[in-house]
Every structure is written in C-alpha cells, then in structure tokens.
Length: 251
Length: 210
Image (cartoon, rainbow over all chains, first blue to last red; front, side, top):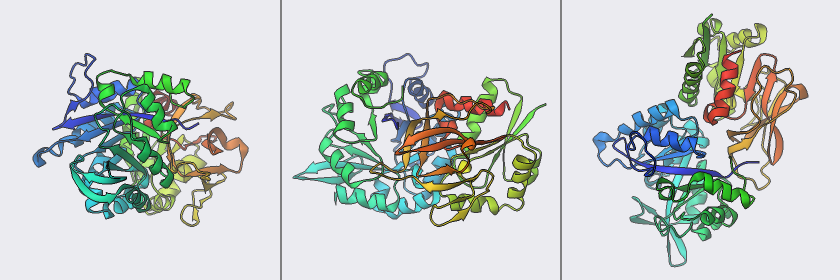
C-alpha cells in the first residue's frame, strides 16, 4: 500500500535554519543538515526547506545547504522559496534537490511550470498554492499570503495540473499558524478536481488534524512546521495515531 | 582489487543523489571502490559495476543514451556479454525493457523481456508518488536480497515482465506491478534506493559488493 507522507518544513534564511527544531540538543541548531538528518532519522518521509533569504546577494546560500544535505540525508528533499526562473530550478536540482516548489513565479508566469515540467519531468515540480477564503470562494495569494491575486483557487489548480505540475502544496493562509486544523473544505474540493497528489499545509495542531487531513481532506501528504519543531507532537506520535485509525504510514 | 563503479551520465536526472548514496555506502562499509560519473563508453569498458539512472520521459532517456556514440554497444558488452553487475534505477530500469508506450511507442534496450505500460488510474493519484511496500518473489537465486519494506517511488509507467522468473519483487498500486527486475547480473529497481533511507542504501551496498 502507498503510505501517507508526513513532511516537516524548515525555514532557512541566509543558509541557516530560523524556524526549526527547538527541543533537542543539536550541536548546531542553526545547521539545516543536522535538522534534516534529525527528522529523517525520526520518521519524516520527506524534508522540505523553505528558503526565506531576502537579500539577493545571499540567494545562492541555499545551494550549498542543499548540496550538504544531499550528502547526508537519503530521503526526498523539496526546496522552495524565491524561485523565479528555470535556471534557479536547474541549479537546485543539480545541487541535489529532488523537487522544487514554485509559488509566486508560477502566478506571474504560468509558463515556467510547463517549461520546467518538460525539462526536468513533472515528478520534481511542486507548485505551492496559498489560498484564503473570501466570501464563499478561495482566492490565490502570493508573497507569503499578503497579496491577493484575485484568482479562483480551484480553476488555478486545474490549470497547474494541465501545465504539468507533479504535485500541489496547498496552504490555507487562514489556518496557517493557528493550530486549528487544515482547511478541510478546500482540501476536499481540490482533491475532487485534481488527479495529482496534494500536500496539505497550514493549521496542523493536533494528531486528529492530521487524520482529518487524510480522511476528510483526501491529502496524499501532510506538511507541518511548528508542531514538530517544538515537539508538541512528534512525527512518530502522528504516525502511530494514524495507524490506529487505519491510515497507512511508513513506520 | 579496487572496484570501479560508474554512474552513467547522459544529461538527465538527479545523478548527484545516486553518486552521494554510493559514496556514503562505500565509506560506511569500507568497500574498496571508486565512484565515477561518466558519459564515456571507454570508461564503461574499464568499469566493474555500472549504474544507469533515469528520470523524466522514457523517450528522452533512450534518446539521451543513443546520442552518445558507442554507449549502448558498450553497455551491451558490459552487461549482457560480459555479465558484469548492472543496476538500472527508475527510468533506467524501464530502459531494460523491449519497448515503452509512454507518449507513443519507443524501443528500449531489450535486455529483459517486457513492456513499459501506463499504470491504470482507477481513481488513484498519478504519478504513483511516495513510500510503498516491496514484496520479494523468485528471490532464491538472486545475489541481491532487498529488505521487504517501504521504498520511495515516483512513476506513472511500470515494467510488465513477460518472463515470470525476471520478477524479483512486486508492489501494489491499483495493480500488482514489478518493482524489481533481475536477469542474472542485471538488476532494475523502479523505486529510488538512493532516496529510500537505510533500506535503500542496503540495496546499494549489496550491489556494490557484488
């Protein structure tokens, strides 16, 4: 049976982890490689780095982070944040990323999804979609959820699938950071229109939330950050809970 | 004698991951080996082990390989005639088949009898992406004995073996499909051992020690 994936997401700035594990004595808690290795040894099915480096001069720091991680961590690695061109994608894949996650660039120029899927294969192209519910529909936002792009989410998702996206990372900006659970409504709607896998993100706070993300939301994978970083729940606890609920996970 | 393990570089795929995994394995297990990435048939000739990775479309991969003058001939001599250890990964495994129906009909290397076919969707998400169970079959005579557990897959097409005895392992996703093929010294894995944690590295170790 195919397993539901659990993915911890680490924020990396100027080559250092700024939002990551906060509860174990890593020799250097700012080291992305140590954090990625910790998670890979403790049940993570994939690792996600979100590069939040702001300054253009330091943008290449993520490449050496990816390279060092690929030398030591042998589970899939997705890297997102700040990708604007096919060249950026090529460099990340060459450095050892298995997948890249594109967000704003896909909205500004949907052709980047098509071009990169053709060049590198759909399997490594994840498109991150940040949505907010406004009235009775979900609208796509960019720039970390701050700019409303006035695009209806479900039609956007279908378009991304047609362009060749291999996977969708769907984040509810309404739920992100609230620990009130994934937005199950948009997840299940997205699940109905998409035949590619969906990674649910935004709102995980309890083990039940993870269960609902799969059982109601229909997600193929569940991504979370702070609940794992602060050890409020461990990945193993989530997985053991999902197993009792008859959801297949890798243990 | 020092082993010469060559990973074939034909301009496609995340070769770095495969390379890193081999480096890690030979270091951790004190295997006397050099890991080389090469697109040179002369290097294949001097190798003791060859790894054929592959990502993306079948057609792009087989074209990438045939565009290197002499490469397919040299690989054939290496694996089929001289029977040296050979490992195909993902599309690199699919290339071993007679042909593929991905985006039209394309000829493969034809070393192991079978066809590459599309996985039936049956309301399942495509690609088949993530960790799934590998169950052994016909493994009595195989020199590689993978652990029966989960490995990381990403694919939408599968290897339909014509000869039952070439099936070393199977996996279920809608249908029961072949996840490892074997023919004497030639191995092909549909999943990514280089991305499948310790159990994946273990397959790489067993291959490197052949």
